[in-house]
Length: 357
Image (cartoon, rainbow, N blue to C red; front, top):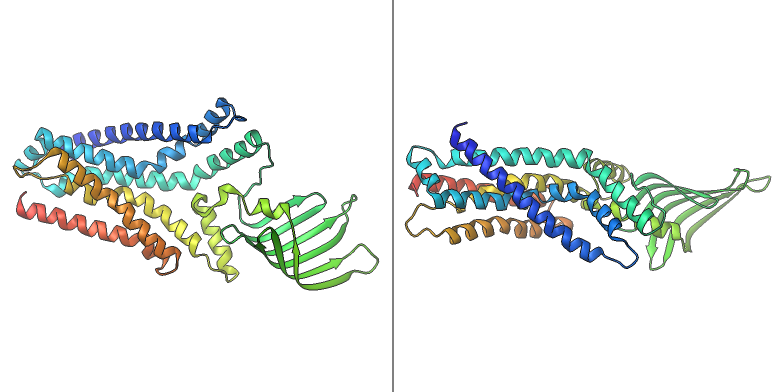
């Protein structure tokens, strides 16, 4: 790696840091205003937002990377340094290597962070929100299958909790007396929400309070349950907020029960798509910002590069909607935009090197 590449890396990283700080400040300001409540102190708000500062920094990597790349290329074009580099025999594709290297590091940081650190901070955030601010019991949703919940003298084991469809599978309820003796066991194949009512399907109940156990089988039972209401509203367990490991385990559990896990698969692959977008965006943003013609305009070049990169999210949103509706497999819905942008970027690099512009 030559001195010019090291100089590009230093400039690029500097503007990534500056972009991250500006984006973080603006985001936190808006969230503090939006979350402000008369019953919440400023200390509580700052503590709550402080817990997830690392989450915000990592999630803003793609945007900060795009902005920093646009600024770096624009400055090098305006100063004539990039023109001098090419005039001395440097190639456009070699100029791209420092950007790719930094973005590759960002990719691995995002993946490692989501796997190890994100679940810990996310759990701390929602625990503080529920217990210290809302003064409510925090339901630990560390897993959405094999989940145990307690409601007074009733103990529940939920086989699978699907928050997207507000359903539960393979639910067993144990009713216990004061001496911890089991009075009854109720097995339910599936539970779904119908308005404010929970519908229990294929229910088998064994009454053990008497000398002889009595078994009752019912096709369907309608009842209200605050416990089920709370369990299906665990805010930190929406698919996009689950960690890679949680999503993988949820997908495996649902598939083992013959259930479709398309939305969870979309959320898992979206994590890899988002992390790799730090590289993909640059395949379009960098070449669009390079122009050695006499009619070159710094402002026009920067805006073209920026909007070219931002179009990625519009295209990604379109394909994600296809994936969510099952019109496309999750892997294609998440990565077709990558293929399109990388292909377009390679063609633009080749065209610039061929034409010498």
